[in-house]
Length: 56
Figure (tube, rainbow, N blue to C red):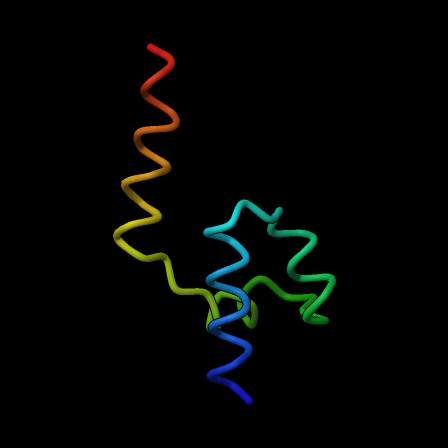
């Protein structure tokens, strides 16, 4: 169950879902609990950097 939840949360974030929406779906209220399931991948970091800086 925890693996599936972690996978869902991580992939949903990578696909562009809003964090508040993901938390609502998974039933998380506290950020500290939610963050235990969230895995920020290197791929996601690179995409976010490029998205932010390509506008410059």
